[in-house]
Length: 468
Ligand SMILES: Nc1ncnc2c1ncn2[C@@H]1O[C@H](COP(=O)(O)OP(=O)(O)OP(=O)(O)O)[C@@H](O)[C@H]1O
Ligand SMILES: [Mg+2]
Image (cartoon, rainbow, N blue to C red; front, side, top):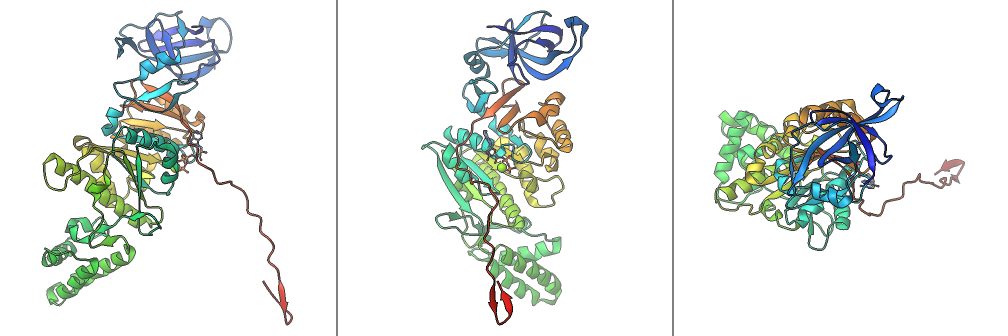
């Protein structure tokens, strides 16, 4: 191994290196004697210790030594003037591997797989980056890896892009099921919400109701109990309730809300509905394609699914009927629309519940967003693995710093230097403080982007007038 540099100063777990090798960059894993570290920051500086002007220095974090395949903490500071070496690919893989592994790509600048520990999936994940940085590709790789390890995955697909991506990424052992919402498409199943299984409180996922309206709705639902009914029948129930003068105003207001619900959720509400427990299967990715639905419907569907997934797992834990028998990963694209810090919709609350209680019941959450600063801080801080890609917005960077313990200030500062597909992964799933990964490319056919060239419309002259 050639020397990649020399330690010039050392303080606790932090060292400074005079860099000699051109291949050293932020994220490079280094070795000094039997200790390993990672480059967290680089810059040119003048320094009397290194005898000449403007040399390339790197700050590195020492994270441990390998003992019988396990990483242990380094208790003594590294001695100055030691040689800094670059471990080879097989040594890197040993360093990163856990009992079972998944990987989204290679350690930056090497061919070593950037192994992560999939067992930590239930401590939740966040994929955060500016638009176009490669979030969806990263998420597709992550989903592929979990699904091929048999974990059922449920994915809310806001742009309708994952079927194409995943069908190129997953192997034969993984099935992809797509459910459309609101707008049926040939060859796909539709996700339906069963009205007769909704309780009064559930209706607040779809429309806002005050306490009097909720009690009136409870009365109507009690009267319909024991049968399968549609929203139309609940609306008729409002008419009946309104016959009693004492309830006339409430019944009217409730009817107005439910009628508008009926219009907006046409094709979504149904007598029987989709059994959410049946969406959760090993070796299956279930895509809920909400791309054709309006925002309010999307949020309500996310709210409903989140609640049902958690309830299904709670039923399993308590040995109740209709449980969800498998642990699962729930992935939410464009999470700022469903888990926004100032979002008054119930989907926010339901995702918060998964973020805080999901682990107990075997649900891992993965939120994906290009607007991290718009996501509820509570939810982000529950995501113990952060996957960060190119980010420039200072508010987003500030929000990330506040929400994640695992990431240090220097890494956040350098996030704008990342290229498309480059990802810094820090936190529970990574064995080392952070790993810089070049995410595998998924070879989907790209639509060629070009300006359309139209022919000029011909003018036809009829009795002295021009018509196009
Ligand atoms: N790992 C990768 N390697 C090579 N190219 C990539 C990689 N990831 C993404 N790209 C390229 O970048 C483009 C944008 O990627 P992607 O759709 O994943 O970005 P995004 O962050 O999800 O964007 P948006 O905010 O629009 O959802 C892709 O079409 C692809 O060409
Ligand atoms: Mg995307």
